[in-house]
Image 1: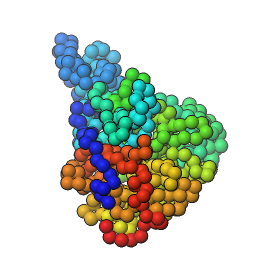
Image 2 (image 1 turned 45 degrees about the horizontal axis):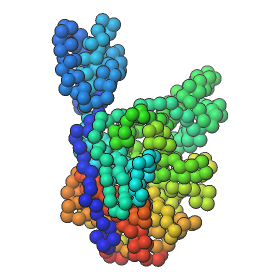
Image 3 (image 1 turned 180 degrees about the horizontal axis):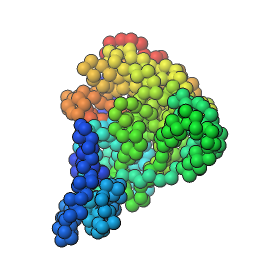
Image 4 (image 1 turned 135 degrees about the horizontal axis):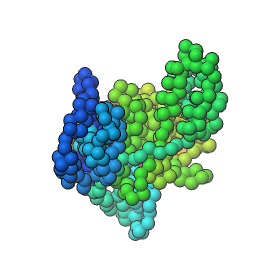
Length: 495
């Protein structure tokens, strides 16, 4: 089936090492044995005369000022983070403090290593378009030094027909700023249950919290705990569990002046410290109107966790953990609407099988119903989804990925019943898209992989990562894809 239905576009996105942000740098923290050298460095800067400080600061701004937004503000922030290491911080001039901040900063190329695993949704702005056009937002997994992943974006216009125009990804990058969030009590309840932390301290705190609360309310409740509870052997450890679990939810926002392709969702919690991976965006619609939702994998260097985000405008994002047996492992994809009043998602809780999970009244994703297991030769290692199901008149179109010999990834398709998605009504025999010779080489060879496409003007538009070296785009007529599918679930066969 490869190459018959899917038509590859000539347009590609490649990783660009010029796309940089400024990160905090603390000398010594990157050593095998951590020994911070911060105090000694600040002392050396403090002994520079004013003329040398001004010269160094001026030279730094000349070299880097045009590459970043508000570089002086970033230097001041980084100084504030390390000022406790200064022997006599009050003696440092404002210029010296900025210079200290510069020495505790470094550039990081967010996609120097790889650019991959895109998803595509309708853009919030549909103005100034011609008939037959749709502006889309493309999410991207960006990988830099140390295999650290973040979430970036691109903007493109589809149509008319199979025309594709990608907006130039120029401009200065911006990392979202943390902002206040209304925490959800039900997520804290389920999170503490997963930690098996059910005791009198937990119960007292949870009973005192409203359904939605801010950080000040949370701390006020913790501060009001009776001393006889805190004096228990589990008191302090329970408080630590509560704070850590609560901190898993946060919000980040960008200024309205930033273009979508300039925004970077950067790891902001310990659970994300080694990356935010494989965002699957979908435009979710219910009686309150459309909203953007996504799932992504949080990685701390040892453990993976599934996170959800929600945004009304792709400018302010709220992140929350996903709980329950259906949220284990990687690769959850949300349905774009409720089905029979149920919130549904595709998942791969066992690491190798596509399943369907339902959100219960306690905001926990239930044990999944198996939909499709590894069967064909091209998917015998594992299968998973390639993004959220796409609604068609014939049913829910699910793009799948399978892993075969030499860890070769290819893309296939299933069709689920529109009203009973736990029922597979058809499948595509063989593969829809697989690595061609030009796709094989890259950061992760022999892979084509997507985190979600959409239908526009009767065409399935499928963005895909090619060996993590570039992002390509393919189109497939929906009618032709549905006509090529075979009724019933897939059965074991050779490709």
